Length: 233
Image (cartoon, rainbow, N blue to C red; front, side):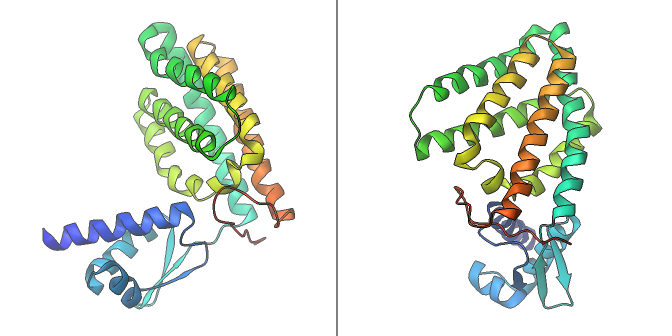
């Protein structure tokens, strides 16, 4: 149990650092150095590496360590193509569920109310951070209220890969547009408008993808989080 607990701790720490960009794409992870830094032996570190490889976040390098998966243009396109298929369907499904059970609209109404309050506030670090929290709450609410369990699970499994792009996708430059897009998605769900919810989700994801791809051509863009380099392969 102690070994499992240590492995879980190392896994959670490394995953958090990879998702936040603190450990950047393409970075090498030495099992020894990682163990020293996180005060763990090589066994739990390797176990953590194996779990992260299964999620597509790292690639194992012999028995000595791992390499954080790079972010590529083709990878971004593939990710958002899949996200659009899954998340637009899920968002429409939640809107349909609201027509049968109006109580499902409650969390989306709460998020909408807070987004509208946020919209009226002056730009600040706290405003950006609160928006990101609300965007996360929206995503979790969609996952929670999607009636197809396999669909919910598939969307949840993509979240770590999406999170690695957050410093680009939710930059201060795009906050106003993304906030408006989230309001449209919330309203469509609350109204039980299935087609509108699906379209609003697809529009949001397309705009987010384009922001990320534009960043490839504008490497000097300053975002809220660590700069992420994308490769063209």
